[in-house]
Each structure stands twice: as structure tokens, then as C-alpha cells.
Length: 398
Ligand SMILES: Nc1ncnc2c1ncn2[C@@H]1O[C@H](COP(=O)(O)OP(=O)(O)OP(=O)(O)O)[C@@H](O)[C@H]1O
Ligand SMILES: [Mg+2]
Image (cartoon, rainbow, N blue to C red):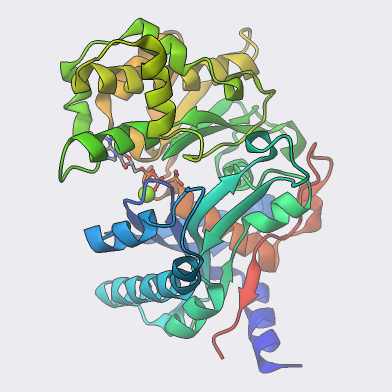
């Protein structure tokens, strides 16, 4: 047996593994690094978050990513060089974080790397051609493995698409393993660049769990802030939006896109929800609004589409609690909008069920890596999409 396979076999057989989850979403705010101690696998999994940090991307880093991010036309040469470059930057961020925590790379069993999403193309974005759903995350796993000396599992979304899914939201698996409850119906809502939720019926099985994107999270608000407020990358504490008034006509136009009439579950990205999307709605309206009014309207747009998706998919007869994670939960106006749209539903931070709301997505990828090496195919039984039993590609450091 190759010593690499022997190493992996040993890791898979451990009662408990140290796994680093790496997540960098469409917001391009930074790399989330979650060092987790994961015991067991499948429904027996338990996780302790040993350390967490978000390493902020520098303006120069963001600029490089933005040059190839969710655009129709980019430089192929730039895409090619960015694939290993992002990986080596992520590897450096991991090593620096480990050293600041006084943890040796040899103490870590695995890295689970999401990679940087460059383009997400569900079939609904290109319905008339011969191609199917596709998604592209860059930041090559071999470079992370050699850069850190740690076995790396990466590129999780391809297997989900190969098995008939849309490559997202992958939160469904970790949400199910970590957040299911015997007596409480739960909605796990993550508001990152895009918003998505997982519904976990009390005492449910994986085949009863439901997960979907809802539409924009912070992406439109972020894009507008970046363009119109120099040097600011997001509307901190909704400072701008709170000075504006919601414009009903613009809001209705924003909600008209065919994405909102597609059947659930569905996925989407900033390839649709971008400034061009907003411009088209504004052109139809023909009135010029203040930046503050536009931000107030975009904030409400995010909240209304999240609330509508939840109401559409959950019977009004059942009671449930919403646990929120992702950067959008720090936007107090967005949370106030959600509370006003869902007045009889309790909305709390995921910290209430023991999950750090900023670390959650990174933890979920660490769990997927744990499942890839130590999980059981039984977990997948009976789910409506053909659920792959392992996701991710394995890269060895040597
Ligand atoms: N204090 C705050 N006030 C308002 N918005 C905030 C605040 N803190 C974070 N945010 C928002 O959260 C965003 C980052 O969210 P997050 O890191 O969850 O998203 P992401 O990196 O795109 O990940 P995902 O893959 O989950 O979409 C920021 O771009 C910003 O819009
Ligand atoms: Mg982020």
C-alpha cells in the first residue's frame, strides 16, 4: 500500500480527527478558517470548534479575484494563473493562523477546502443550450496540500452536480448532522453573498430534509456599496440603508425575475444578482432614487425573498424556529425586516444551538471532509436527489 493511502486509512480509523474547514464565499470578504475536532461520523458526529478566524482579503487580493469573478468574459490566462495562486495564498493563511494558535501542521489530519467560486451556472441561467448545471471553484487542492503539508480534500461541489444536484446548497448535510433536534422543527438560514436555508423537521431523516437558495443575501447590497461609496465594501450595521426609504415600485420590479417563479429547490449566484440586474429594474422604473433609498430597498428585497421562500416551503400549520448564520445576521436592518415579515416565528442566532454563526459554513465543509473519509453510505439512503456518499477530491502533500 502506498504510504499516503496508509496515512489516510489511519486518519479514517481515528475516533476523532482535527480538520480545518476553509470557506470563502461570494462576498469576497476573506477566508474563514475553522479548526475543528470532529468525533465520530454520520449521525454520531460531534464537533468542537477549537479555533476560528476570518483572514480578511486585502484590496489587491479582492481586485485580482474580481477580475475573473462571475463575469461572462475574462482572461483565460488570468484564470489559469489564479488557480494555483489562490491555493498558495490560502495555504499561507492557514499556516499563519496555525502558528498564531500554537498548533503544528502535523497535529492537523485534514484540510477541507471549498475554494473560491468563480462562476455558478445552474441550468436555469442557460436554459436553451445543450449544457447542464455547472459550477467552478478555484484554488487547487494539490497546492494547498503541498503548501501546508496537510492532506487536503477540495472541490466538493462537482460530485453533487455529477449525481444530479445543482452543487449547492451543500449545507444540508452538515446542518442535518449537527443541528437536527428530537422535538423542535428548525430552519437553518445562512445569509452570505447568497441566502439559503435548510429545513430540519423534528426527529427527521435525511430524506425529509429540505434545502434551497432563496436569492440574494448580501451580494446586491455589497455590490452597490462598493460602487457608490468609495473605500467601503459593505453596509456596516445597515448605516446607509437605515437613512433611506423602501421604494415599493423598485422592490416589485426586483421581485419579478423568472428565478422567483422557478420551482424549489434551486440555486443561484451573483451571475444573476448583480448591478446589471438592479440597473434593468431602475431603467424600467424611470425614476432616479437616492443611494440610501436604493440600499433600503435592496435590504428589503433580500428580506422579502428569504421570507417568501421559507413561507412557500413550510406548511403554515407547523411551528419552527429559525437559526441564522452568515454575515447578513450582523445587518440589524435586515434582521428587523425579517422579523417584521415573519412576525410569529422565533428568529435567533445559530449560537443559540451552539454554532458560531460566522464559522458555520467553514465547519460544514470540515464535516463533509470527515464524511468523505469516515462516513457511511447509509447516510444517503432515500434522499430525493441522488446524494453522493462522498464529496471532494483528495490531495496528498507528497
Ligand atoms: N456588521 C455588519 N453589518 C452589515 N453587514 C455585515 C456585517 N458583517 C458582515 N456583513 C455582511 O456579511 C458579508 C459576509 O458574509 P459571509 O462571510 O457570510 O458571506 P460569504 O463569504 O459570501 O459566504 P457564503 O458562502 O456563505 O455566501 C459581508 O460582505 C457583509 O455584506
Ligand atoms: Mg465570507
